[in-house]
Length: 111
Image 1 (cartoon, rainbow, N blue to C red):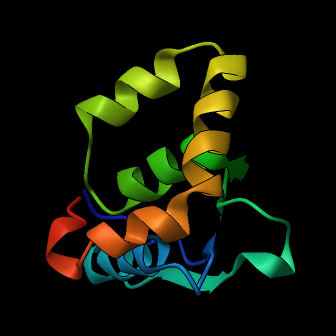
Image 2 (image 1 turned 180 degrees about the vertical axis):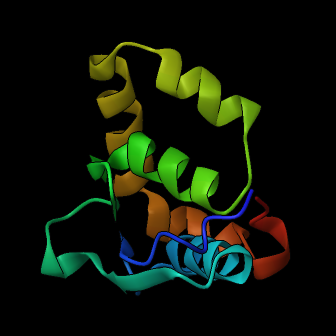
Image 3 (image 1 turned 30 degrees about the vertical axis):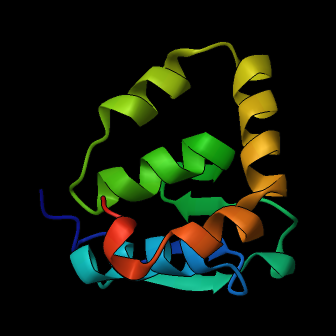
C-alpha cells in the first residue's frame, strides 16, 4: 500500500515510553509521511490524525498501522470488541506501559 499522497498524518505518542517510541519509530520506517509528536500536545492517550479525522487509543494504533501497510490479527480482534471493553483494555495497558516497557526492547516491538 502506498500512502505517500496523504501528507498530513500525525501520530501522538508518549515519547517517554519505550514501547510507544518503538512503535512510532516502526511506523515512520514504513511511512515517512507520518509525523510523530508528543501526546501531551493533545491529551493523554495515543492519537492518530489523518484525512478521515482524529482516532484515539486502539483505533489510533490500527489506523497508524494501516497507513504503514501493516496489519495485526490481535489488534483486529480488539477493535472488533465493544468500545467499553476496548477502553478498559487500553486503560490497563496504558497505565502499565512504563513497567511493560522494561520487558520490550526495540527488537520485541514488532509490527
